Picture 1 (tube, rainbow, N blue to C red):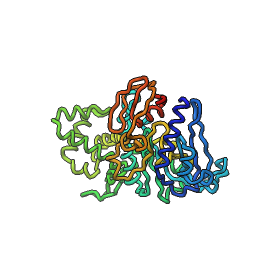
Picture 2 (picture 1 turned 30 degrees about the horizontal axis):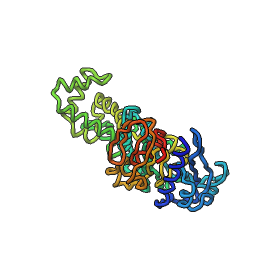
Picture 3 (picture 1 turned 90 degrees about the vertical axis):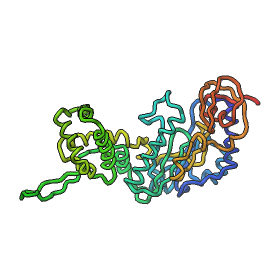
Length: 391
C-alpha cells in the first residue's frame, strides 16, 4: 500500500470516528486493549498490552490514532496494562465465538462471492445461536458483524465468566458435535412386561431438544419421505445405506408404516434395523447442524476481539452490533457501509478489478485509473486492490 493511500485512509477513518459515538464493552477498564496502526510495508504491527487508562477516552483515542484495527480482550484483569499475561492477573473472561466465512466447510473460496460467503456465515450464526440460547439457556449475548468475513458472539452470563480453557473446550465440542455418542442420547426405562414376570427395558431417543432433537428431526424427515414413496423405491433408498440389505430394509419400512407415531415419540429402538438407521442420522445431524466456529477463539481466555462500532481496516466496513431480531434483515454489504463514505466519488488506480457487491449495488470494476463511489474505493484500497490517485 502506497503512502498516499495510507494517508487517505487514516484521514477518512479519523473523519468517521469524529462523527461516531462508540459504546465500550462492560468492564472496559479491566480489559487489555490493542490496535494496528497504518504502518509502512507489507506487514502489520500490533500494539497491545494497553489499558483503557493508558489509551485515554475511547472516542478521543480513535480520532487521535485513527487505527486500522482496534481490539479489546475477552479477559478481564487486575492489571490489564501489564506487559506479560502472568502479571496481568486474570480474573474472568467473556465466552466468545467467532464465525469466519473463510473457514466454513460449505464455502468454496474463489468461487463463492463475498455476498454468498456472508450469507452462508449468517446461516451458521443462526445455528450457533440455537445452541447458545436453546441448549445452554444463555441470555446475555452480544452479536456482532465483524466488518470482514463473519460474526462474533460474546456471552457474558455470570456462570460462564470464570470457566477455564478445558470447560470452554467442552462447550466447543458440544456446538461442533465433536465426540457425539448416539447411545448417550438414549434413555432407558424399565417397564413391566405384559403377561410376563420379568420387566423389560424401553429405550427411547431424547427428543426434547439438544442433539437428540436435531437427530430426530432429520430422521423423521427421512421417514416421511420414505412413506411417500412406492415400496420398491423406498426399499431401494434404504439399501443405499451401508449394512442395510433386503431384510433390514423391509423391517425398517414396516416399522415406518406401522409405528410412525412411536417413532415420532422417539421410540427409534423399536427394531434393531431402525435403531441402526437412526444412529446414522447422528452423523448427518452433526454435518448439517453443527456451528463451525473458530475453536481457538472460544478456548482462549485472553483473546483480543474486534471492537464493535470500529472500522475494519481490511474492508472499510463497520463492525456492527446487532439485536437478535435484526439479524434476519441485516445485509452486511449494505448496512455496514459507513455513512462517512457515502455520497461522493474519488479517483483510484485499480490493480485488481472484478465484481464488487456493496451498498446495495453491483459494480464491475475495471483495472486502471477511474472514479468510483468512495465506499467502493475504500473497500478496494483496504483490500489492497487499488491505490489512491491525486484528484
